[in-house]
Structure formats: structure tokens, C-alpha cells
Length: 79
Image (cartoon, rainbow, N blue to C red; front, side, top):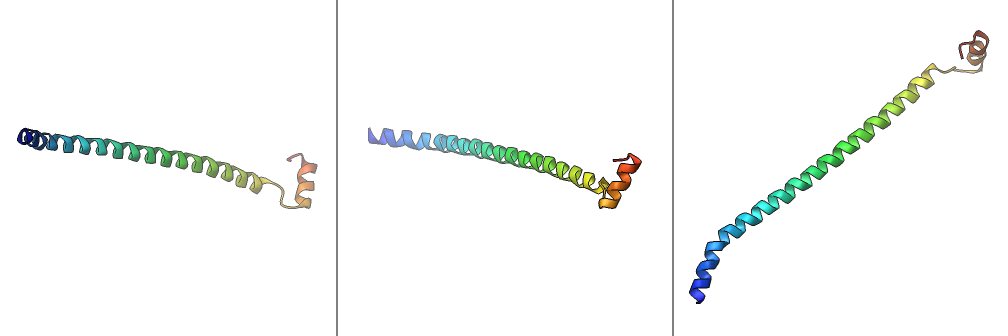
């Protein structure tokens, strides 16, 4: 009886190892996908923030530099 169980165990052990390896591979792939998704989201947020910052810098560069420049623009109607 014990010999039969031992024989059965040794025959099922490779299949159990294979199933464990496949399970670990799937879990690792899932984790890698989650990391890639988070990295893509961070990149998207960074690009949005960078674009907003660039627009603010461009708007500031087009603005009047001092009071005299502001008055000149108001008189000329360019403001």
C-alpha cells in the first residue's frame, strides 16, 4: 500500500512542479503588466504636467515685462 502511494507520489510530482511553475509564471507576468501600466500612467501625468508648465512659461514670456511695457501695451490696445 505504501509502495503504491509512493509510486503515485513520484509520478504526480513532476506534474505538480509543472503546475507550480506555470502558476508562478502567470503571476509574474501579471505583476509585470501592472508595473508597466503604472509606469505608463506616471508618464502620461508627467507629460500633462510638463505641457501645462510649458504653456504657463510661454504665457509669461509674452506678458509685459514691467509697468512701462504694460502702459505701452494698454495705450496701443495690444494687451
